[in-house]
Image (cartoon, rainbow over all chains, first blue to last red; front, side):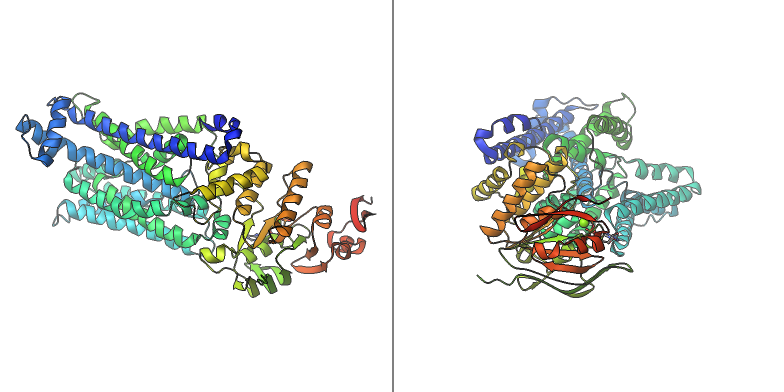
Length: 358
Length: 255
Ligand SMILES: Nc1ncnc2c1ncn2[C@@H]1O[C@H](COP(=O)(O)OP(=O)(O)OP(=O)(O)O)[C@@H](O)[C@H]1O
Ligand SMILES: [Mg+2]
């Protein structure tokens, strides 16, 4: 809250004027994040074995939609068929995981909540592992994706069912989710234990997370999930804000708290399942991005949700670029990079700011 | 004008097997202040939550302006405002953002009228300088006043407050008294307020309800309710009482 002090000494201008200014400032932060995302995206498209200058990237980008001739067929191909689908998937997946995290953190009123601490992502990994190891290859990668999806949703349904049990508090939901996560991870380990080396490697992909399968299809799938869920989250941002004041206050303000909690957790599961089904368990993003966004512009969901989406997209895009180009001849799984960047960042955030104990 | 008030009839509530309210009757009409007093764990907060619709009564009937408590939706929510006993918040909402949340419409667009109302309430409570401060960074008393501001900005027919003064110092207590008086006398709100400070209740309220072990032990004019015998039997202490301007005040305890 950089402007907080300045505003309060401006008492002559009143609280209303201060509010208007704070809205403007938050919109500015959102604009800045969007700009940063565009710049990182453009820059990222120039990187790779075939160096493509920025101008040519730009030309290739506008050439296809507008129908004029790009400078080189090759640049056109590399940008549209290789780099852009991967980048776009990274941004969409990052946004999806981060938004899933921020919604869960609010619904469960717990800064530890994320798609991973609740076992939703682990469920997806288990679903994928089962298909890989028992070799239902009839539908190719779709079988894996579909099963990951089914398992992620199943885990969320179990958590929701626990939530339906009389007077289950947000805290008991979290604890149940963590217990579920350990159970699922153990199951995955057990399944992998009896698998051959190839399958084990494949399963690793799902538990660590990678964008190596990203293409336009995965982008479309994740974007569709975002298109279904994000507007609902945004429409409900007022009620999500009221939830921050406590269940009791929220109820007294007319929020149907349990319906909101169940409905939105279901949508989060949908979103996370869609992302994890294609990218595996990219950890930490869902935990870190919301906290970072809150530091930038506070807890008001009208601004926090878009900011978290942008930050999540930005962080995963950067992490993916690092994983691709960080080491000259090895491509790291992006999940490893997000964890390596994410955990020190998170610890720094914890030390820097006293998170209110919930 | 004559909107029906808050009517609580033979209200029973239990957490699990433990019965906390055992047949409570209370009325609050618009324009009056009713103070709810009683020892710890006598069921005061539970009673307020039943009226607010946070808890569903086990038995009995609770209506607010004729609408059964617990009716969902914004219309029913516009009948009363509630200030809970604890005002912890999870994440750094600013004071003015949180006050605007009291206004039903202020979900996406905040119009000029909303802002002016919020500003007026913040100034009324002396919080204008803190408008942009995140709630978790406030002191307990400041946060309590922010919660009161969020309730006042709604301007509902009824106002329920659970120990709104327990973090406030003398001056702010006095301010709270005048604010609640303003609510009842000028805005014609029906105020039901839980207080631990019996003297404050005597000063402030038109009527006092003394709750003891989940039942109404006494109810009426402050002078009728606050007596030596009642305090002795309900609270288990022997009070030193003085009479001032026709009312009795507790100034200490024997032994
Ligand atoms: N969520 C809960 N679960 C189980 N029991 C509860 C719960 N809330 C309150 N109780 C019990 O109900 C009884 C009444 O509690 P309540 O909060 O209504 O008391 P109170 O009169 O407001 O007390 P205080 O003056 O301490 O605030 C207490 O015995 C308490 O232990
Ligand atoms: Mg209480």
